[in-house]
Length: 293
Length: 121
Ligand SMILES: C[S@@+](CC[C@H](N)C(=O)[O-])C[C@H]1O[C@@H](n2cnc3c(N)ncnc32)[C@H](O)[C@@H]1O
Image 1 (cartoon, rainbow over the protein chains, first blue to last red):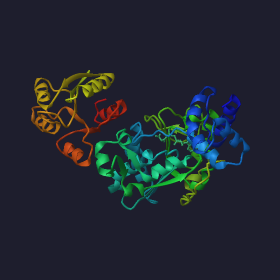
Image 2 (cartoon, rainbow over the protein chains, first blue to last red):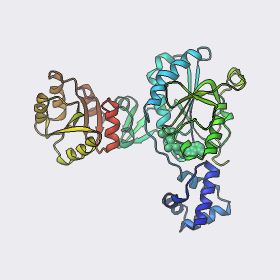
Image 3 (cartoon, rainbow over the protein chains, first blue to last red):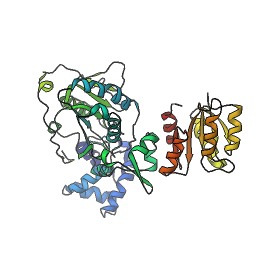
Image 4 (cartoon, each protein chain N blue to C red):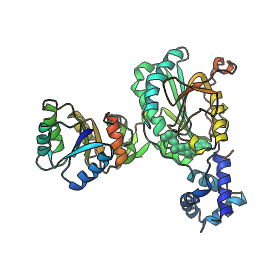
């Protein structure tokens, strides 16, 4: 792959997914794209880039972009956000949504499903308080490959040991040979959809809780600002935004403020017209959107 | 510094566990089987016990039952670390008073996650 090929790939990636790669990451790109090239019958990465440049193969482009995403995830990753979910977010929403009895949650970079399933398990533990409530978990990701795995809810022994307390493993998973599958009941609590964060969020309606974790780190400053600003517009005024441990809104947008004493937890900074808050929540129109913008 | 008793009949596993746990700032005591481990606990109870299931003399399961009846024996956090990785074994271990369960093979991330889970880190 020539430096020009690499530049071309970087540009495609940035445009299609927001992911930015520095000039020194060519080795990483090569190691991740070689399998794609081989699978698609190209003898070299140069040939693959050539085919991409011809612009006719959207399937190939999607495969290339997906191969460049980092999909690592664990159950209850970083723990604290899930403690916040149980002890702050849900109790507050149980009080403030007494009338609608509906809570809408969005995992905006759900990867292989550990995050939305961790939320589902947390909700299951609180089910007595949620009798008669409708709780939706929408889980989206750019990559349809990771979503397929998420839908199946099948995890390796290694994956179920990172962050998942053993009692929850026993309670919610079935052993299938070397793998562990999460219970159908929990799978039914999560709706998985392919969706690109560069796309239009408004189709989803308004959310009470948004987990958008460990994805903004891969974007440049402008894209972070853009995504965060648009997120604030699909959130209820008293909703909650949770970012990854290495991510923040501070210094990027003023549409969110930190929930005092709770690092990593944000709530919209209400200065916009209250229309969004008072308008009836539109029902969920969950439409899968193509990865390309 | 917290102490961890590593109970495993394989010296290789003990060595790997020692390296990982020392990296997590634990002081390590080793035992080759359940009997030795009980003697060690009678001398001094550790904060944590990383425990294999299948061992000669006294196995992990029997050790755990004896341990929990010692004075103060409910104190140490016990994390099984074993190749018995089926639901029946896990359920049995929890029933006998284990706090967490690691299925071999394991790595540093898993040990760290499990020790965090039971509040040792
Ligand atoms: C490191 S994972 C984070 C998973 C999970 N949120 C967590 O914190 O464990 C990042 C995910 O973001 C997804 N992603 C990357 N760019 C995206 C985009 N433009 N739109 C939606 N998802 C994207 C990747 O496919 C990947 O699955």
